Image 1 (tube, rainbow, N blue to C red):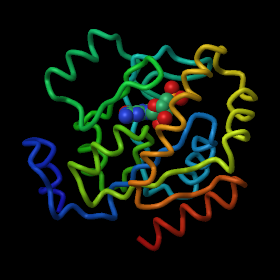
Image 2: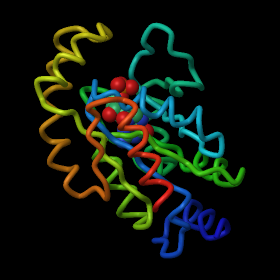
Image 3: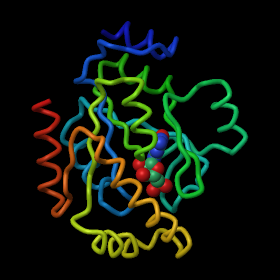
Image 4: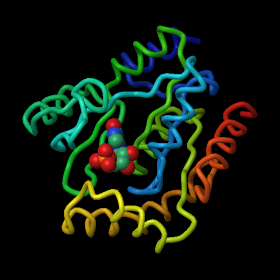
Length: 201
Ligand code: 5GP
C-alpha cells in the first residue's frame, strides 16, 4: 500500500487502494475548538501524526516555525504552487495554506496514521484525489457560541474576526460532503466521538 501512496504523490494519478486507515482530514470553523480536540487526541494516540502545513500567515504569539506551521513568504508559496509541491492548498481569510506532498509521504513512510487539520476547500481537494481519505467536520453547537469563542480567545483583530465569521457559513455548507460530523459541545465528548469514528472506521 505504501508504494501506491508514494506513486500517487509522485505522479499525481488517482489512487484507488490507499489504506483508509491512514489518512484523516479534520476541519472546523475558527474558534470551534478543533485545536484543543486534536491536541488531546494526539497526546493519547502517538501512532498518529499531525501534518504541519505551509502558510503565508504571520505567526501568532507562541507559534513556532516548523511545529505549528512552516511560515513562508508569498513568493515561496507561489513557487510551491507552480512546482506542484502541494497535495492541496487554499486561500482562507486573506492568507494561503497548503499541505506539502513530501511531508505526507514522509509521515506515511514512518508508518504513522496522518491527520490533516485543514479548511474545507482543501479537504474536498484531498477527497477528490484520495477518495478513501476520511473527512471529519467539527461543528460548533451554534453560530452564536462560535462567535463568542472566537472573540474570547483574543488572538485576532476585529477585521480578521469578521473575515473568519464570513467563512463559517460556506464551511458549514461544504461540511455536508464530509463523512462524519462531530458537534463540539463539550471537549471530552468531541474527543470521544473522534476516537469512535477513527477506531470504528
Ligand atoms: P489558522 O490561521 O487559524 O491557523 O488556520 C486557518 C484555517 O486554515 C483553519 O481552518 C485551518 O484548518 C486551515 N488550514 C491550516 N493548514 C491548512 C492547509 O495546509 N491547507 C488548507 N486548505 N487549510 C489549512
